[in-house]
Image (tube, rainbow, N blue to C red; front, side, top):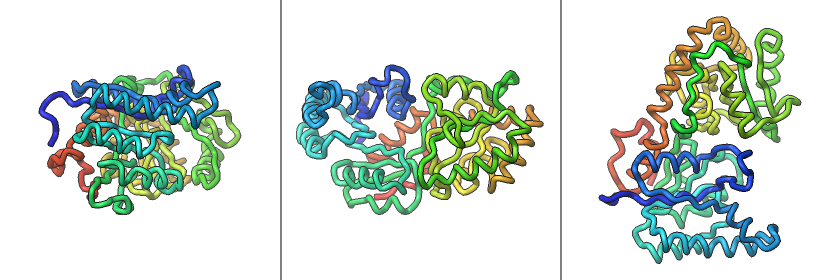
Length: 349
């Protein structure tokens, strides 16, 4: 049963403190913002940073990890959270979570995983937590999620959140832009995007201003440079290393649509369940189809602006951090979510 008082939230993630402002804003920060908007008490615990800070000489990670686990137990004992969200935390052990549960029998432990579930590392992370956590949420839907149910936990879909603090800009009405189309990625083995982007580049590069970074021989960008490039772009590609997994997307979709940038999304994604094609986003089937649509909306800026503005509005309505946090809390505390959330059918017990 959900606490009748103010919920006390502890977000455990990699907050990239050691990047000193050069890192990207991950889901952990969005959870923090959403908790504040919900008028919850909120605390963060940056697992990797604390491990590094506690490691003797800065690199004896095994010792730092042991000390971090002790600090985590101490944090939970002092703060007494109702809900603990556990993100990318390779050093936090299940035995530590068991100790926290013995100290706080009513605490809800939730594993959040935003990585692709076709990756072995992601699957191993989920399997590691499935018996120690009350719930697991991943950014992919479909019946594969049933594989990680134990009879005692919940496994559900998690949309990629936006937040009005981080995606506060609205560039949909901008006419003074640097790039007609934007894409930033990192090539890796098995990346299906590489050939698609190469084909697209050959079809459109001489006709539009294509801001392409981190692939096809272009330099990568991150941090504030990435944000500035987004704010200078009219349209962008929301591409994943593999397409066809129900509702899977990297968090780039929130970065794009949340800022009022017209997003091109693979028709294999299933996101037509949430966004109207040609009204709130644009879906494509192939490189040739994508090229035709990019050139069309480049030539029709008013139509592009209208779709981007509607998409931004819809994204913030559906997937804002405050609402996603309420969904997580409603789910783990056994509330009826069937009529509250458009993706409620993707929760398995």
